[in-house]
Image 1 (cartoon, rainbow, N blue to C red):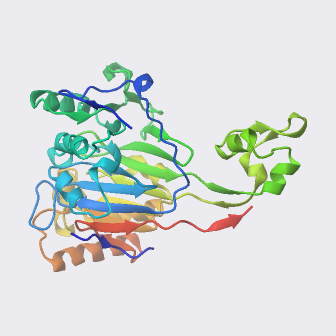
Image 2 (image 1 turned 60 degrees about the horizontal axis):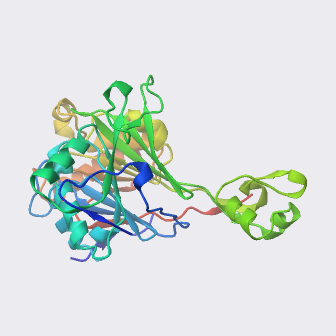
Image 3 (image 1 turned 30 degrees about the vertical axis):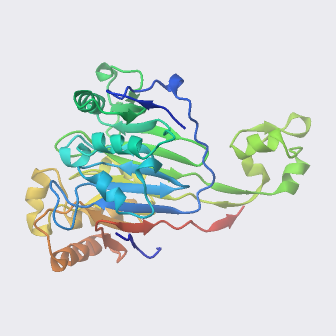
Length: 372
């Protein structure tokens, strides 16, 4: 099936239980270049159960030839097979928002699929998510004697007393009402997680591209940073010593900068304010919209949102684009979905609202460069 595109705005296979890797055992390093193209691909947009036109939850973030997956409901591996620009073997990281079945039942099968489609092996898959995720995967794979790629699980904890594995991650602000976790950082992007309110522990994920600097070789030369090791270190974000030992940073030798893009993907929630600070100024906000406005009391009681609630949060954080997803199976016609878009637009104060459908692709354009 062709992907609908929205207009812009190596490798070792383990068997049986798929043993998790300690950081020191991981032999594969990924160095990302500056990201030119960045897209979100929606693989499942229904809540709780699939319908004839919508699978359960899953969305892929594509960039630099890689794919990171947020949630993996049942059938996601089949959905990936229907997208020309996406393959299971391109998936390097998976971020799970919470431990409800419509968000995790597809994980074991997807890991098996990655092995079957990676004859030359696959780098270890990093899987991030709630406490209990490691045990769930281990038992599902052990009981089915599945062959899977090497993988590691990093569970997110808010108390050290619940941590029982060296790969577990402790939040940065444990006493705060808005704890956050830093999951990944390299020279190009940083990934954060923040707690949001649902019936069970739940997270939203923030993918933040770093500011890009355009190098001025003449400035670098004047400061004593010549081509070679020093310049390479400078490009990686390190501080180096130029003429007479003076410290030089990338900012000292650039003539233009381009602010990085920010993508926010939330799990199920009736209150996402726990990630409000992290989500400020995002290019795209993906927010659930399980029920319509007439069912707002039920939505809140069940830990879900309406389009108006999604629009309110998009306005609060100053999002550029709002994408609604996770629709109840009761909304099966275009009129119902259009009504939800209108409600979100009214609360958001912007017409830049999209209702996701399976295989929708949302490009995230680069921001403009600014002279230093």
